[in-house]
Amino acid sequence: MTAQKGQIVYLSHGGGPLPLLGEANHKAMINFMLQLPSLLKKPDAILVISAHWEEKLATLLGAQNPPMFYDYYGFPNEAYEITYPAPGSPELANKIASLLTQKNIPARIDSQRGFDHGLFVPLKLMFPKADIPAMQLSLLHNLDSSAHIALGKALRGLIAENILVIGSGFSFHNMEAFSWQGINIPDPANEAFQNWLIEVCSDTVSQSEREHRLVEWQKAPSARYCHPREEHLLPLHVCVGMAEKPASTIFNDYILGKRSVAFLW
Image 1 (cartoon, one colour):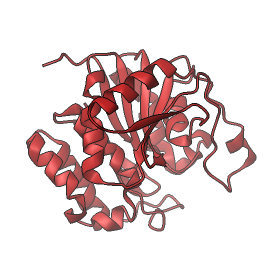
Image 2 (spheres, helix red, strand yellow; image 1 turned 45 degrees about the vertical axis):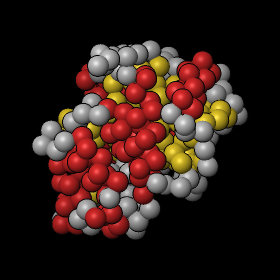
Image 3 (cartoon, one colour; image 1 turned 180 degrees about the horizontal axis):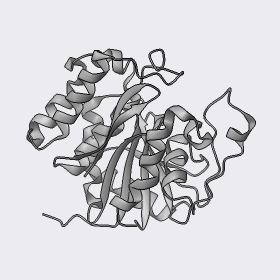
């Protein structure tokens, strides 16, 4: 088995640009992001699978100097002045595209698209110097669970390199249920699904069972309440497929009044 040099994280990236604006209901998440690099070795490059990018084919960000893509609306002016001038990595994009096509996963490279907030929110908190090459991989627009686990398995070829792979989503993503006033109201449905995620990603479950349960995630307690649409959960499927081992729970706290989790492999 290839020795693992790379690191894999699935995290909840918060509501739009609010973490970068110091919004109080993101305090636990902000503190977590600021401290997360202390759990990691500094990577040579960062690959983000963002919940905010879906394409028909697996698509890689190929710009040498990606622009900012403010994929949100209705926020204060400063939300559109955020910068994250990290370089891209066309070389890594080409390498990943090759890994995917070798596993019969069609892939393409987009040399125009910029960093969306699924990348620049966590990375601006984690690595504010913006001195590490960063790039993104899209989700598949079909939102098929099995296909996203397969996408992760195809990325196993990166595991021997010092690359940080981040599944940037949100383990609870029901926009109508968030507490925008920051009140942590007891929510048994939210609790049940987060507990299910922790159990599935832990060492009490075999990899085959883990993948099976994630493929059938809609059978989990309160699944569709927590994820009316699954785009913020699927980056976890990619991470699990790539890691092929249990995770450590590294965040288990409240964001916008709802319990959310993060995992490290």
